[in-house]
Length: 172
Image (cartoon, rainbow, N blue to C red; front, top):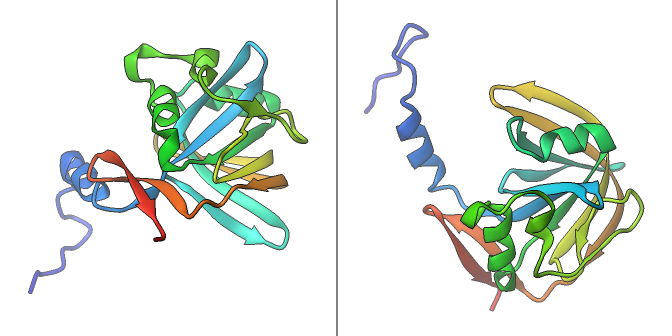
């Protein structure tokens, strides 16, 4: 049995924390924000429902990302849950190859619904959100949004992040 440590114990090693987090399975989503040439986005696995009545979402966004100031400026964001067919989209929005800003949107079809945030046309689930609040904690902001519109394309598959990589998940 491991003995519990008090508040004077050594802080958690960052490398150990990151290694442990890689063992938690997460749904891969792309957060989008901005309009036209002034847009960007990033991959997150930190998206959850906050409330069904009224519909609200939470996402955690690194404050040093190019997307964070766009969420703040435009007061909207899109949440695009990805399927296995979207691995290249995930890689582009992860910044592989140095791809940044509006160039991340190339190679996929996008649409808007109510807020102007870009939504992936064939996303497993897409949520168009207006910004309610951004709460800063550590290097990230907890971004809370009201869901203004939803679109789904459930094909029984999802793209997940586990053990440091993207992996397909199927209900079959």
